[in-house]
Image (cartoon, rainbow, N blue to C red; front, side, top):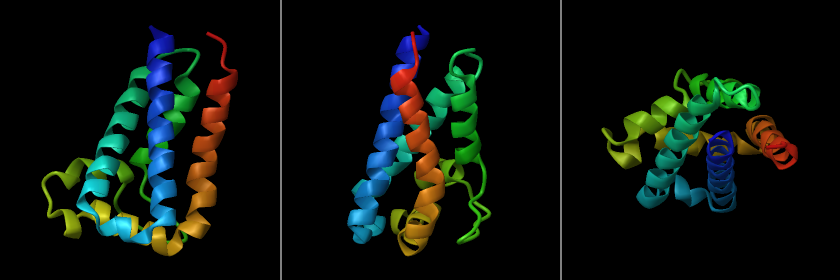
Length: 135
């Protein structure tokens, strides 16, 4: 059971990392509804699957780090009182192009070269840990 949950979490991390790579490569995606829909879905899935592994002895540390990153407002280089998870959860009830998620993605494209080294380095490290995790 844990392996299946861990595999799902790994897939979610890969999807979120891919989303950010796409956004960096094409900044206009921050105003693309289809892309924002996908990001919201991927962030929610990542959080749900991380929560499911928080009580697992083999994966709880990685799962807790992921949920902390998703549930903590961003700091420098830009400050937001929103979390990635809040923006993803609120997205469905907002005008996509005026949504909190859209604004966070805009900020990410504006400051991503500084921010990316923090959040996505941690996600990459967790993905690497999954590669070496024994089941």
